[in-house]
Image (cartoon, rainbow, N blue to C red; front, side, top):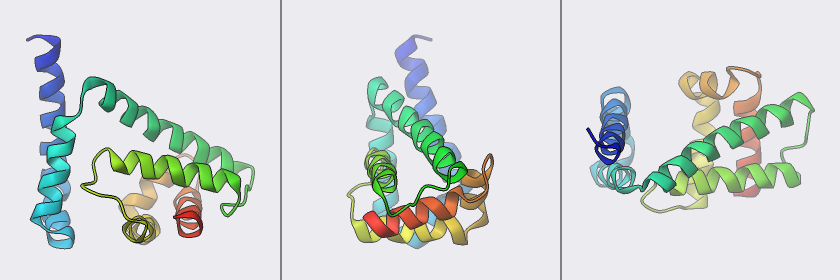
Length: 138
């Protein structure tokens, strides 16, 4: 298998895993069209875009954890930077961006234990801090 084929397989596996784990819920919540378009965007990513998307995710978590550890105000400049990085990260897979949808998603980061566990896995409070930053800056 060539590197290009391996990369295409990785993207397909990512979409298939996401569909298996969250597909029914996402389709009920956001509709088939939005989920299908998100999947198309993922499958259409170049290797460079995919790597940038993954690096943004890492950067966001690092910034979140540092901000929570040092009790930085999510309404300040660091919160604005994290919110902007998160918006950019979402834009890789969202069919279109809206501040309203971004704010609604941020509420799920605290309300849904799966999101909270993801963001809080190393430093408790990251999910709430991210939500607060997005609500303030989006």
